[in-house]
Length: 213
Image (cartoon, rainbow, N blue to C red; front, side, top):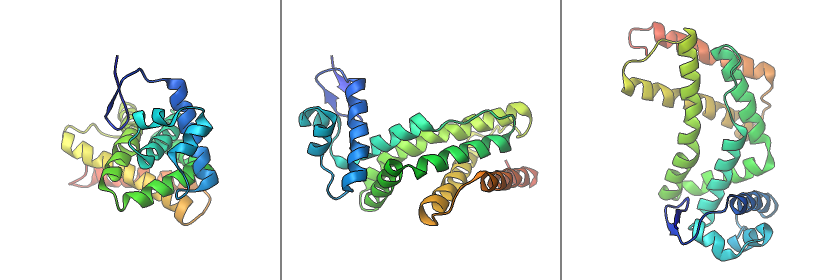
């Protein structure tokens, strides 16, 4: 039996979820302690209690491994709460996202891979597929809920819907990332409420304009 690795390569034995979790946990811990420059797959393997060949069967190198370690954190700790309104849902996910970015392992790993991706097109593509595209499902879910509540109109044009999804994701993710990691400002309840109101107000304005969704 063969299985596909995150890099798309095939391995000769089944994947172990327990081993993968240990490896990704060890990767984040090593990155916080050692930093990007000193992090090696050998150190990760030793911390995870697996052979170094186990890592090479699953990941082509350090960059791919760190991206998957970050992606796992996002998958585990980000969800869209159903709080009864679009504005409240946005507020909830913003607070979750900010709390996740405050974790040392998230902050260190994400900043490292983003910096490396400026020189590596393949790594940038992996970040997009493993993190960005997967987290855009939160926008899709939020839009579906808002449409079901009558807060947003249905969008019959798939192309326009896709552009709006990208825009909403970029506004929310980009703003929270900048405030948390660049400006180093707190994302508290008051800020999240104000920001969510601004986003919802912008969506309402776009819908009422002739060219709006």
